[in-house]
Amino acid sequence: MNLDAVRRAIRDIPDFPKPGIVFKDITPVLADPALLRDCLDYFTARHRGGKIGKVAAIEARGFIFGSALADRLGVGFVPIRKKGKLPFKTAESTYDLEYGTASIEVHVDAFKPGESVLLVDDVLATGGTAAAAAGLVEKLGAKIAEIDFLIELSFLNGRSKLPNRAIHAPIVF
Image 1 (tube, rainbow, N blue to C red):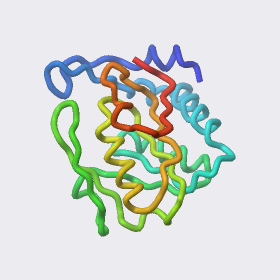
Image 2: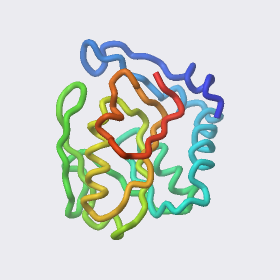
Image 3: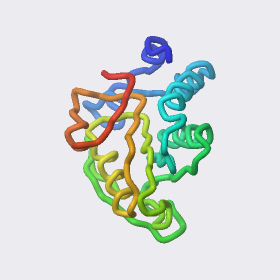
Image 4: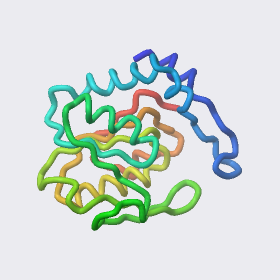
């Protein structure tokens, strides 16, 4: 992956979603077919031939990478969604964000017991969302193989909420 080109394409949006937050906007990366393909090629190469049973991704930008990655790896895709968005029986987790609280859910039948799951999202910030998602996967009897992000905001120390987890992010701010 051309890390410099991807990094240059990510733009900062100050004071979004509230004053004091600098949002890392990946939509320019997504809009450029070469950059998007490069990102997907990078993550696919990291996991091809592995023992991933499912790719789970966190709403909403995680879906973009997660569903394409699941297709490329030939495994199922599991959406982890905001509360109230899934139609079947769900398991739920509430967590803190850098700008409030939120709840996520996943269908209770999304994983097989012991199944190896790759968890995907776009940005590791404070780690609350990823920790809640990983907890849901494990609550349902599956195992987190790795958690992949395109970007890590290291100054927010999100890794501290994900102890003893394999975490990968090629772009670190």
